[in-house]
Length: 202
Image (cartoon, rainbow, N blue to C red; front, side, top):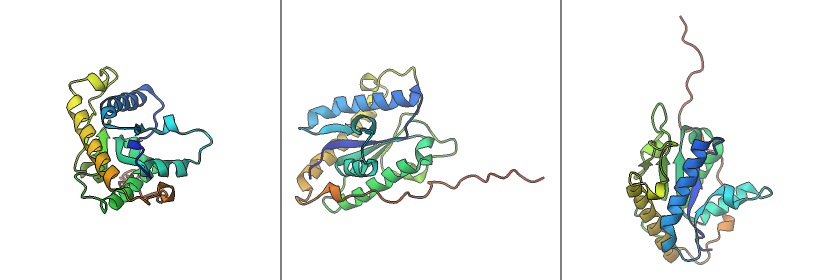
């Protein structure tokens, strides 16, 4: 089964305009700069665009992850608080381990994009990544990312990493590889210890 997507968008859904606009403008920028490199594949898999209400969510997400060359992870504190997004992260780590047997990975398959910093610190899943980009300066006043010189250098780095893995995977994917066999792992534990809810005793 061939690669169908340049990258899988993993993010916590937002109800309000800031999170929705960030996701949309990042997706627009990546599509814009990835398109020249692809043949018939889609640049991105974004669940709100490609899934219907009656879909078997776990099966569809598992298959889309497996059919993606990389994952773009939009990090917010909400991301690590949601079990399902942590599960998508764990799934891509399993895929990364498998694909490391196909070719020598030049970089990790997960590209974290920091939209909002955690008030304490970034979790090690993000801070220990070999590559992440910090877009936490993005606000509602920010111009779209695809033509914004403050963000374009990092967009370019992301595109180059995605395209590199895409090219390697097209050449090295075993002919019998079947993404229908991939299933999501169990929900992983929280990325950090929860604070003690008890008040200090006098």
